[in-house]
Amino acid sequence: MARTSTHVIELNSKDCVRSRINSFGDNGDYIFRELSERDYGIDALIECFDGGVPTGKIAFLQIKGTDSVIVPLKRTPVVSCGSISVSNLHYAKQDRIPVIIIYVSLRNARPMYYADLRKVSSSICYKEDTDRVTIHIPQDNCIHDDISPILKIIDSYYL
Image 1 (cartoon, rainbow, N blue to C red):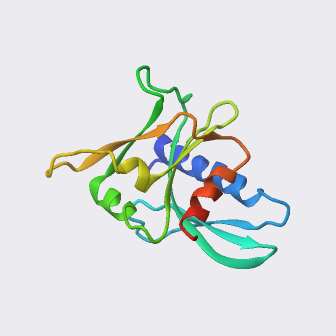
Image 2: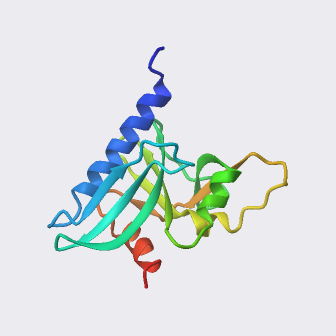
Image 3: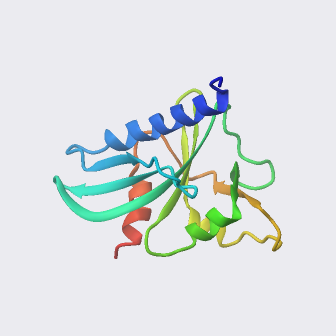
C-alpha cells in the first residue's frame, strides 16, 4: 500500500501540534499524548501539570491539517476546516472534557486555528440523515507558538 499525501499531512500536522504543546512553558507542564485506538474523531489529548504535579486537567484534541495556506472565508470572519461526522459532533457536545479542534497549515509559519468544538458546533443545523457537517473556526482564533488561548478553554471546564 502506498503512503498517501493525506497520511503525510496528518502525521506532520500532529507533529506540529505536538511540538508546540510539549515545548510550551518553562517547566514542561503540558504533554501531548497521541491516541492510537479507535478514536471517534479524537486524535490526541493534552494533559496539564503545574510545576510537574498533575492537575487532572485534560482536553481531547481533534487535529485537521492542510498543506495549503489557510484563508478566511470572504463573507464571514471564519476559516473552514473541513467536515467531521455527525457522530463525532455528538461526542464533542458532552460537557465533562473539552474537545478542541485544531486546524494547522503546514505552510509558512504554520499557523494553528483552534476552537472549543462544543461551542462552535452549537450553531450548526443539519438534517436528520446528514452524515457530515462543516466546521468553521473564528479567524481570530489563530496562534503560532503561544498556546495560552487553548489552555484557557481547558481551564474553563475545570472551574
